[in-house]
Length: 393
Image (cartoon, rainbow, N blue to C red):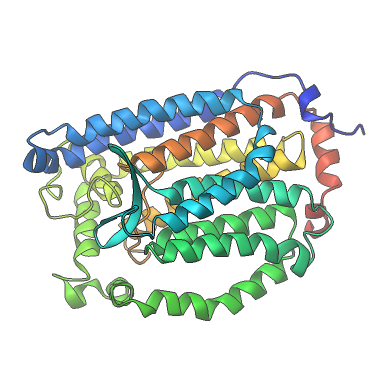
């Protein structure tokens, strides 16, 4: 078998149409649902039912530009930018905690204002963490199975980001950051007993973080029994379940939600899935979940066919980001997980998340163009020489 050619020598193939279609499909669903879920609040607060839709359209336009740009930049360019990006992200995550720099909303300090634009540094941090971990682990093929040299350093970077994010506070995003790091380490060939052992060691600290703050403690109790305090800590969960249950098979009709009339909080952001389930029913839920399944499958298809180890880890990290955040949001909306402030990828209102995710999707599109040109024999040869082979049956 021949060795895979260097990425620069591989002929560029056509763009992955399924990947593009799934991203744009989710964004289209998001625009429709943002307008439907936010129209009442927009009219009541700003006298304009399409206020939030206009803002989301502006972010979507910027996101499309970023996606096109990153799809045209060779994916290996992110190796040179990985270290500066992760340093900049750490500085931004620290800066958002400084009064006068970080903006407070809803009791959390998560935003930085740049003129009329607010953005969340944590969304940039997710992108930069994936780029850095892929670069770090691609250079340490033989060390990744070592706990001290291959596993702890990447988790240290993710842990530093997670601690800063917890200070905002934003436990949901902290969980996503650590989950991304664990997924990339697994794909890189880290030993399962190392990852499992660290999870056991970290469990007490995670439990303390979840229970230390009174509002987090109330969310855990509400998750266990939301009807214990139906008008307080359990209100979000109950109203979300009411919305989901009201949808039935085909929903009450687009734009006909009753829960958006100030019953369900955060209806166009963290709980937009509940409004979607209410208006479009099980049929709409199946379509949206199907779009996520197609998107994640195409990202990991590109990872499996990547010309080099770095490309495979880069796509794996972005796939874990989308899949993990989607599962977390859907779990919260259906009462299967405690309430966390994590948006539904590509669908929830919010520019920082949308633009960052579309930029990541563009990187995966670029990678898929080169991966399509690699022969199956080369893919098998690359996999067979990787540390992942050693744990395969």
